[in-house]
Image (cartoon, rainbow, N blue to C red; front, side, top):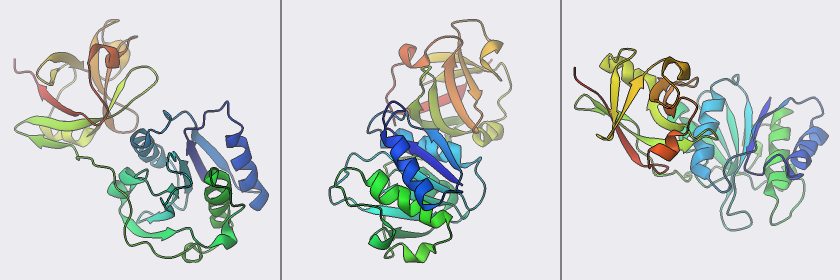
Length: 261
C-alpha cells in the first residue's frame, strides 16, 4: 500500500501522472491519496499531516510525500525506514521530521541508484524518482538497493509538547481549511493533568475556551478545545474560524492551563 501526499492540488495533472508511473511499475499496488491540498511549499504542515495519517496505515506501508520547493537543487532524494517498518519516500527537507520523532529511524538511504528511477527531469522528481522508487519497493525490491546509506537527514526545528508548572506548553502544528488550530499537544498530557470535560482552558493567558468532546457541545461562535481524531488537541470555534479570532502563527508556542475555580 502506498500513501500519497503532495502540495500539487487535485486540479493538477501531476498527481495523475505520478500515480500512472506507480501503476506502470506495479499494476496491483493500492494507492491511497492522503491529500494533495497541502499549502504550497509548507513542509511543516505536510510533516504534521503525514504523521497523523500514518497512524491508520498498516505495517509495511510506503509513503510518497512531495512538498519540494528545492526540486532540482542539491537537496537529496531519500527513503526513510522507520522502526515501525514503514517507508517514507521524498525530498530531504524536513518533511519526515515528525514521523521520525514518533516512530524512530531505522535507516535512511539516498535514492541514487538510477536503476529504480523513471526519468531524469530537473523539476519533476515526484514522477521521476519518488513515485517509481515507491512502486519498486511495493514490488519487493530491497530497501538496501535504493542507494547509499545517508547518516544524517534534515529535521525541522520543533519543540515537543510538555507539562510546565501545571500548564501544557506546545506549538501550533498547522491551520486546517476550517480555520481550526491544530496543535502538537498529545491527549496523554491532558490526561496526566486530569482535565475534565467542560473545564475552562486559558490559551496564552488571554483567551478562554471550553474543554469539550466535540464542536456541538458549545454554542455557535464559542471557542473550544477538544481531542481530535488523531489524538492531538485542536482549538476551534463552533461554526467559525479559531485562526481568525486568535492571532497565531505556525510553529508559534502556545500555553494551555486550566482555569482555577
